[in-house]
Amino acid sequence: MTLDMDKSSHKIGLAANIAMVRERLKKACLEAGRPLEEITLTAVSKTQALEKIEQALELGLNVFGENKVQEAASKWPMLRKTHKNIELRLIGPLQTNKAKQALGLFDVIETLDREKLAAALAKEIAKGAPSIPLLVQVNTGEEPQKSGIDPRRAVDFVKYCQQHYGLNVVGLMCIPPANESPSPHFALLAKLARRAGLREISMGMSGDYDIAAQLGATHVRIGSAIFGERI
Image 1 (cartoon, rainbow, N blue to C red):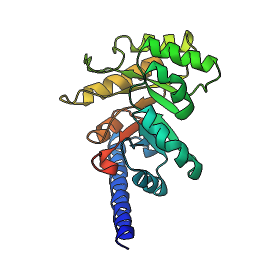
Image 2: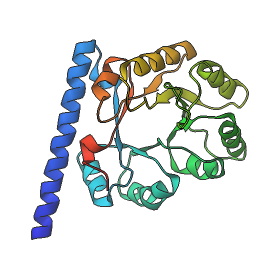
Image 3: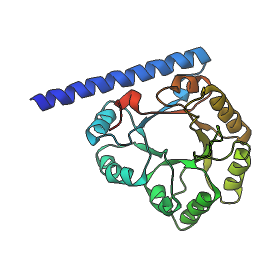
Image 4: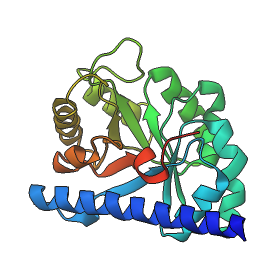
């Protein structure tokens, strides 16, 4: 009985969090003069318990972001058996030796960040792996410790991946520096996406997704604001 009550209270809390995120997004879109429907909510489920993810699915979320191929492989094939219409997005770094597995597991990869990875993905696709949509990660803050293409090279890199490797690049993604205002980084990413003719702009996380929504995001990646602090 206590266990059922705990599950019920957790689900109520999760529902409240989701409602709050959606309301905040709605307000941001209203202020920016954008339809809420232009923005997809990606629930970041990395390190979250299966029970919480299942509750999120029951509450209507169907787009999820994972950081690691191995962790995603341990839970999502099983969840897909009982829940349809899931979209799974890789939002963490991808090693070239996991390119084949990632293409078979994810619906979208958001972290194409170097030519070596582009070549590895193209090689696996040529062998029969699905040609899924890809986003190029841009290092808008030019931080040496962070993955991503230099913003000055981003548009050329997108075109090179599309034309030379035949990759299905559909958008850009960024993670602004933690100690800076995200607004200039979001504005830069949106500008680069327009220049490259790309439709998807993945930016904004739990602390700044409303700003991202106002500045052109089509996808926001929300973890702790939905699920609470990660394990």
